Length: 366
Image (cartoon, rainbow, N blue to C red; front, top):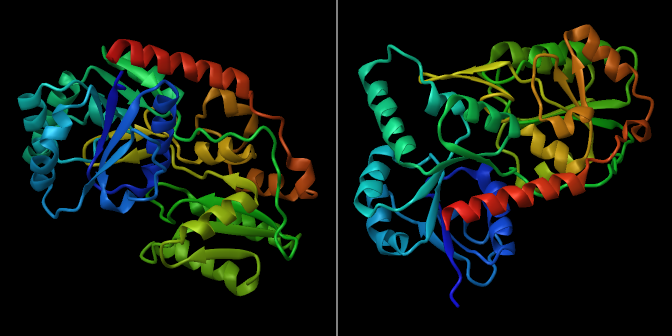
C-alpha cells in the first residue's frame, strides 16, 4: 500500500528553519508518512532523506516558474504544510485553483491574527492576503507551546505545536575551552532591533574587573551601523582582548555548532517586543524565542531578562535578571563549569505529549 504524502512548501530561503523541516520529517516518517520538500535549492543535501522522501528544489529566479514546474506534483499531495515565506499573492492563486488542504506555520502570531490597524495601502493588501491564506488553512502550526495557547485564545483555527528541534539531551556536558575560560554564549545576529546588548556588555565589563576566566561569545554577525553596540564591544576588546569574541560576517555552520556546544551558559537578552510595519510581537507569547531550541538541545541554563516568557518545561533552566547589576551578580557566582549543570528535562513526558500531538494532527488531516 502506498504511503500518504505530506508536502512542506517553503520555496524561499530561510536557513534558520532547516532544523524545523528535519523535525517535521522525522515525526511524520515515524508514522509511515512520506515527506516531499518544496524548498530553496540551498537545502539540497542538508536534510537527510529517507526512502519515500523527496526534494523539489527552487532553482528559479522567478517564483512563478517554481509553481508552474511543480504544480502537478503539488496537486498529488495528500496534505501541505506552508511556511509563510512564499509570495502571498501567488500562493492565494495556487490555493484557490488547486483546492489543496494545508496548514499554515505561524512564527509571528499577531502578524496573522492581529495586524496593526490604519496601515498604508500596500500593507493593507498584505493584511487582506494574510486573511485569505489564514481563512483557507485548515489549521495553524506553531513551534512554541506559549504561542499555541495565544493562538487558541485569539483564533478559531485548530492549532498544533511541533517543536523547532527534536534533539534533547538528558544531561548537560559543559565543554571547557582550550584556555579553560567559560564561554557565555549569545546566539543570533548582533543588533539592537531584537536584543538589548548594552545591559549585557556593561555588566560583563564589570565582571571582568573582578575575574578573568569568562569569555563572552557574540555568536552572530555584528551590525557595525549599530554604533552604541559596536563601541561597547570595541571597548571590552581593547581592555580584555581574550575575553570577547564576535564576527563581522556570517559564521560558518561548523563553527557555530562548536561554540553552541562549548557554552557554559546561554544568554537571551531579547527585547520584550519586536516592532514590524505590520504587527507588534511579544517574544515568548506571540513569537517564539529561537534560543529555546539551543536550551533544549544542550540542556543548559540560560540568562534572560525578567520580562521574557519561556515554556513551562524549560523554566527551571532560566535564570532571570532585571538589570546590569543582577546580570553581573549571576556571572560572579559561577565558580566553575561543573556547578551549572541543571537537572534533566523530562524527556519522557515531553515525547509522550509530542506523540499525542502528532497523532491528533494526522488523524484530523489525512
